[in-house]
Image (cartoon, rainbow, N blue to C red; front, side, top):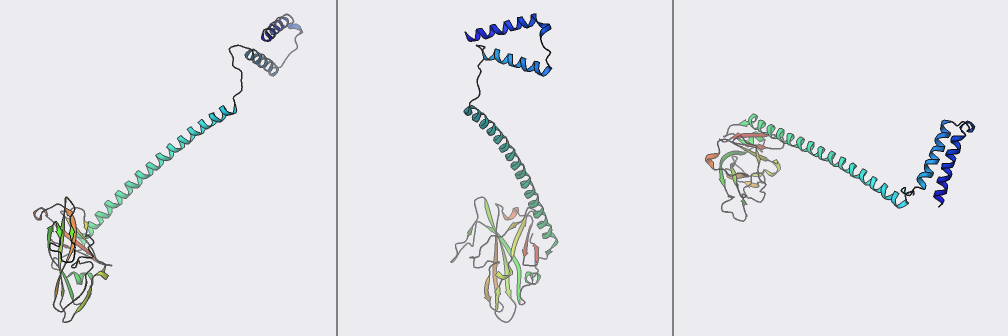
Length: 257
């Protein structure tokens, strides 16, 4: 009933104002906008189809939380994309560096090549009186074949062991305490122009070239070895074979085949 009375008063006011236009005071544009906004608010407030109410604190908090969640998800996606991009770039750089390192090692093998009969002890600056020469190589599944006091080394499935043999000779007239361990040798092989492969660490092997530490009698020759794990190849499939020995400050390579 109150709504009907107010609407009636508004209608009568409109009629009275229409009939008394000459007596109506002049209003500024701002004042006219205020009156219009007030009248519109009253009509909406008492309209049966208009739900006039303020937003509760709970609804406001929920809306803000939803907005913050969207912003966090957007920020997380941006960080994830950035990290993935940086990871891809780093992987590409590492692959390029690995390729360059391999190419550099292969180039060094060719540049430092010496004759297969060369005395590696002289080339690498070992103690006088000891001679070290390449002897032969073999391909096998495990080494040594008849291990005594040593469990031996077995090739993984789909692989083979390449064993290089060396003669270490005491050409002097007295016993020499030979310590190749202190020389810190590193060995690599290149087969059929492929990437080079490093020797396995076999410090418990009695004839290991890298860790050999023993007295060698005058005129005695020791058979030392270095073991490499390679792809499953037969002797006939090896067209070229080159190995390289690194000491602390020198390197030398030998083309075997």
